Length: 92
Image 1 (cartoon, helix red, strand yellow):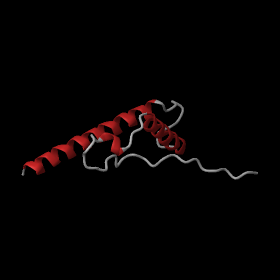
Image 2 (cartoon, rainbow, N blue to C red; image 1 turned 90 degrees about the vertical axis):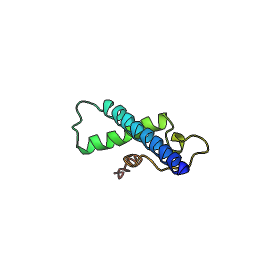
Image 3 (tube, one colour; image 1 turned 30 degrees about the vertical axis):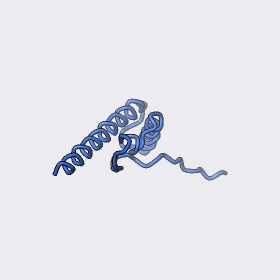
Image 4 (cartoon, one colour; image 1 turned 135 degrees about the vertical axis):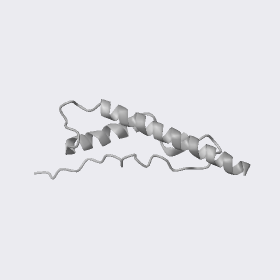
């Protein structure tokens, strides 16, 4: 029973940190968006993913970094968008 409580407390801590980090990265990415870009547009989506990934890389954030040493690995950050990969334009 005690180990189950410890596990649940650790899982809650890791998930809480992951979601608060996700919210912070979201705020930073949205703060960098130019005013001229309309939310929901293709350009907005592309820039958002780029800025989000840049902020994530600046902080070297991966789910493993959210854990203390010796903790079990718990996957967090379900809302993290996939990495930005620009499309290659056909050369004329």
